[in-house]
Length: 154
Image (tube, rainbow, N blue to C red; front, side):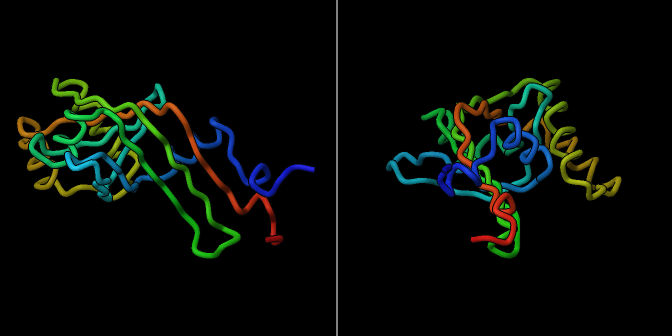
């Protein structure tokens, strides 16, 4: 008989599908003192299944990734215990500074977050590209749980 853990685990394909269905995550990088640095942010997923995040180049998360390219991202949903779904992806991180990959990443992020930008906001975002980078996360391992797989039994 499978364990409860086995019953709620999502496959890698289910984990990626879940990540594509969400838009807000907590990113963990490693600070210079070895402590986790956690920030909530919007993200997107590119066609290759990599998670993309835009940030100002001088942000602490970027400095941390430049020093140590390991990062973890956590996404969760569900209001009640039997609805909780979560994916944690342990990733290799890289900083992308070129304009075209940054523009593409911004489109993945924007399409994941369905709220429209005003024209002025979009102009401001575009103008900030020279100060921004993309953190591209390539998942090496997913850790996941989907309590809805248990039905109403917990």
